[in-house]
Structure formats: structure tokens, C-alpha cells
Amino acid sequence: MDLGRLADEVFEAVIFDLDGTLIDSTPAVGRAWATWASEYGLASMDTHRHHGIPSASVVRAVMPDHLQEAALQRITDLELADLHDVVVLPGAVEALASLANAKNAIATSCTVPLAQARIAAARLVPPSVLVTADDVAHGKPHPDPFLEAARRLGVDPRRCLVIEDAPKGLEAAQAAGCFTLAVVTTTPREALDADAIIADLSEVRFEVTQDGVRVRLAERLDGALRVAQVS
Image (tube, rainbow, N blue to C red; front, side, top):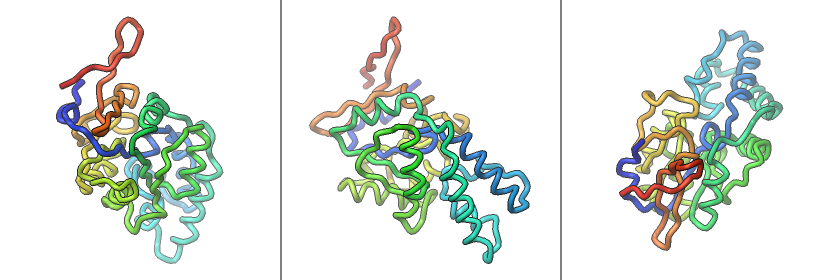
């Protein structure tokens, strides 16, 4: 495993995706969309194909205009009602805790109510900056969510590290000019295009200095984790 050029960078801020990066909501998402597709007489949906983009974009892509408003409300209701087995992913709690004194944010394709509900269900303590699909004109794969997160943090997006699990999210981050770190939690490694790829957040540690944030590999030696000094 190699962090590539990320190992030499000092970042002004770290921006996390939510679903598939900090929390695992995949089973709940699958159940909600399967019910929705069945109710609207659609063939079984490949939810992975739409992973990482706002529900409104998915609905617009598959439903006629006159049904879109009701269909969007229905998937919203289904997702809010199913928070069973939404859990935090490995390394997420530690990552956010280590960045408590640094600039960091979440940029998600969820709406505000859904993001808040899933964060609460996973018992995750989020950063103060949360950018959702409700906050931008265009969601992922457009760069807007990450540009808005950088704006709220008061940093240059080109000095931000984005951590994502979805190809569309990585596409959005790259369009915003951000550095990218992908986690292999929902998408095969070969389908991810990022500056570096790791299994999940337990494989890295964040080092906060007066100059900014560095990312390091975490290694296991004799059953204990230590930070690898990569240069």
C-alpha cells in the first residue's frame, strides 16, 4: 500500500464523504430503493450504478416529469424510515477525533434530514461543517459540494484532501481541484480513480501540525497500530 503524492502534501482541510466513507448504510439504501422500484413497477434497480449521487438526480433519470415530485418524496420517506444497521465504518471515529482541532467537513449527497438521521443512527460525532444536496445547485458528480465545503471552511479547494468511496464522488472532487483518497468499501479498487486507494480509514492516521494536516499510513506491528513515517 502506498499513499503516493499524498504522503508529501500538507493539506489545509480534509473533506469526507458520508455514506460508504464514514458510515455503512448500504443495506438500508438497498432495501429502500428496492421497495421504491417495486412500488413504481420498475425492474430491480442497480443501486450501485447510482451510488454517490443525490436521490433527486436518480429519480429524474428514471421517472417521467409528472411523477418525479411524488417519487422523490417517496424515496425520501423510505430512506428516513429505514435506519436499521446503519453503522460507523472502521477508522471513521478515530479520523474525525484526530481532526478535532483542524479544518474538516462532510460533503454528502444526502439531504439534511437524511444525513442527520444516518449520522445519529451510526452514533457518529460529525464536524461542524456539513454540506448536503440541499445546499448546492448541482450535486455530485459536479464539483459544487466540495467547493461549498471549502468555501465554508475558508480554504483553497486545491489544498483540500477529499476522502470518497464512489467514482462519482471522486469525479466531483477532482473537478473541484482537490486531492483524492479513495476507500474500497463499496466499489472495487480497479473502478476507483484517486491519488491513493486504501481499504478503509483504519489504514491511515491524520497528523495535525501548525502548518496543516498530513496523512500517514497506519501499520500493525505486534498487534498495535503505529503511524508509518512515509516520505
